[in-house]
Length: 639
Image (cartoon, rainbow, N blue to C red):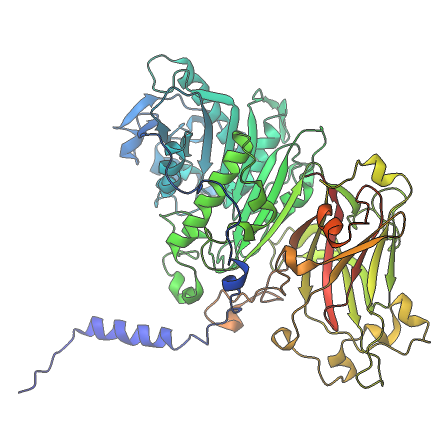
């Protein structure tokens, strides 16, 4: 006998809704992963930075002891803190009454609340603070970084996750307040360390501090680094600053940028180590806005610094925080976002642990072991979660031959006397790099960075299978520059590059003078010109090229660029469930990959080549018949 089961009407409605929602999904759109080859090796020999260290971990809360909404900051505090007046930096607007009533305090009495993890040992230990970004203020964000607290404390850091939930919600232009508030937490830790009754007494090295921020907190760490060296608040000089903390490094996780614009300009940051990472499938901060701070961060005082940016394919916004998870658009994210392509949350956080721990070891403990992974992520292929990464790196020792920022002359470089020349190029132009989306309506979608577009086709029009001399782009150095920069075997040739869609038309016959300059009909894409083999990205052959360096005696040596990193076209990124719901011009983000080539490798290719006297660097397009690349920041750095 069969049994019929009757489901309640509400359950039937739920099933019907789920089926209807499921029907809105189109095919999952992802770029096929090349991790099996790109991450095939583990050449870095160092201890795994995401493994627990030797220290036992203790934990405590510090705070007001009177918090109405947070029992841990009311009943469980080990160290009671005084409130601070943030009213000049945080304006609650029309929501002030409701918010003050909910929290039981105003911006004039903001609490210094935080949860800390710390190693049991003599110390002194570096101090690391992390701050969350904007989120539902009732869904408390600060517990979501416990996985980092446990790891870093075990490896000998005092780590605190700062409570700023009372700044969250419908507030705008408050990221300066978040940055200032981080500095006030460092002030509090100085008081803790001076108090014999606290477990931090004498155990913190205040010359070794790092700040980490997520989302709006990621913008705030840059403001904190800037405010740390200012004597007054840029928006109101009546508010004096007196910080000058020993902040050596800042880390931004999926940050916004430009929500706070003092005097109408982006906050300048200089002379500090910086790491930023972002997920391609971020459903909240839908573009890699942290690249803007990466590009404007300058090294001016002769110190030893570096900056690095990592783009992680299939990572989202919230999975860096265990409270936020995959709900980048709030509780109903599954209705708006296509969550099928996201990388597993544990894998995303494992990436965060690896890079954050290694960055702190490098910048706060001055360990050189991990530096190769920032130059080339392939060196840690055995550690990284199985997805694709695009990485950028620049040290304070980098000297630009051509950054494409200084003028509109396509034939002159950045360093005095450097000249630039194209040969048989179909495309040769400089332009601003864009982001796929704006940060907000009042700011641009620019990366705040100019780059170079080069397109070529080595096939001769009307010549059947005839192929001409490969197109190239040359950077020529003036007399004395290599010696003045002290170049040699230990130096590196650095550049950034990415392939983009666009296959120029076949080259005109050699006797056409326009061929050398690049222009006329030669710049048309084959699709526009009616060419038969122009196609979409997936139909075009992989891009590769040679880098050839010639010394002052005319001795040349060349290497294949793909030996130093993956050369990809932009990775396909569809975040919304429905394609027609996407509001972006491009379903990808243009992020350039850094390549760092030891000059010793050119010597290995030709022992007669003199690395102390390079006179020309040539990008030779001899390995792919036709294509287009974007290039930036060509120059030299030390070892």
